[in-house]
Image (cartoon, rainbow, N blue to C red; front, top):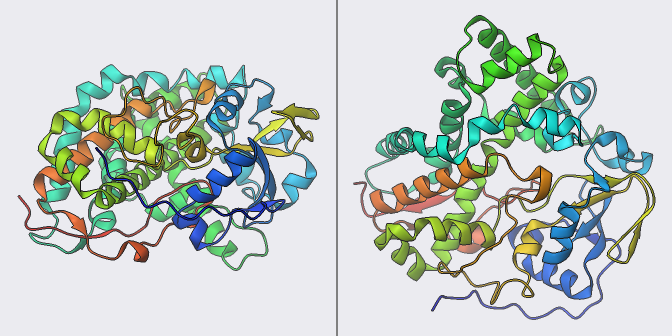
Amino acid sequence: MTNQEPLAAVDTQPLADPVPLTGCPYKADPYPLYERMREAGPVHRVLFPSGVQAWLVTGYDAAHAALNDDRLGKNHDRGNDRWRARASIMPEPQHSQLQVHLLHQDPPKHTHMRRFVTDAFTPRRIEQLRPRFQELADALVDALPEGGPTDLVAGFAAHFPFRVLAEVIGLPRELAARFDRDWGKVVQPVGPTDPGRPLYEARLQGLQSYIAEVVTHKREHADDDLLSRLVVARDQGELSQEELDSMIFQLLVAGQEPVTNQITTALIALFRHPDQLARLRDDPALMPRAVEELLRHDSAFELTTWRFFDQDSDLHGTGIPAGDSVIVSLCAANRDPRRFDDPDALDLDRSPNPHLAFGHGIHFCPGAALARAELQIALGTLLRRLPGLHLAIGDEDIEWTPAVLGRGTNRLPVGYDRRL
């Protein structure tokens, strides 16, 4: 029997139109709002902090259908002027140079580009690299204080996914050491009048210069790795320069920050369910199934990126104007009681567990096998080597990241008895 978080009183007030997805209470716990939205219907107009309005899909069946709906395209060119005016999309020239990666492509271009990356992330290859990933995890734990407290993001979660990613894609150690994690914040764009715009643009330019260095290095020191193969594809005319830079951008940013966040959400869920934490620590064989449940229970990919109809269309009974943005709530889908029994409970024995944490359809995350391995190794290492691991602050003091599409925390103060 698993613990269940206390149920909040059901809010019977009618939903606003649009529904605001803003504020600290929402970021700390979006699930009561998602429950109300699911009960009211599968599609709702929502308002983001930037002022952009979108259509949010919330139920499991509706989300699954939308993720596989070939009428919905991802290319930003489909967006209408109303969306573009408030979307705070990346400024030019960087938008044209860094935003033509897989997430913003439709077939046949998407199919052509995706084939360059899939071999690097096959389950078989990831399994072969597991011993190296374990070495990286142990080295980071070795550097933690012998006794807590410590910030587990700064000491572990912020570094482990990137070091693993560097191994998988062939990023040279000297270049990997110079990567600035703050560059990853460029996926949280700010509007032209926002006071933070100069810092945002500086990060963007820094990351673009770094990508150029990576390309130059790989052209001069080609090897049998993903980055080298992408550069060769560019030089042979199979990719444009913009597509090459954008794919490296996506690898560097989307390939590590979500895993950092997922480590934090998984640990927080276990801290809230100490009996399940103890069970997982004592039975490592449970880890693969536990990771699937932790992904379902609170996913770092809370919402998908934009999708657009190219003509006025019906989506589960709601009329959507052409070029308006449609977003799928993966977290809301993963807590749908119509698909999952007792969906708010953390049930490490849940099986089957067809969660949508990695999306579905043609845009299913190509790095899913890698992310699963990283989570299994990270959680297993931390629980095994830090006995007594616990949250060192009150649950109410957790500072959730304000990122619009993702969930996680930039700090995770923990304590433990000793470091083994």
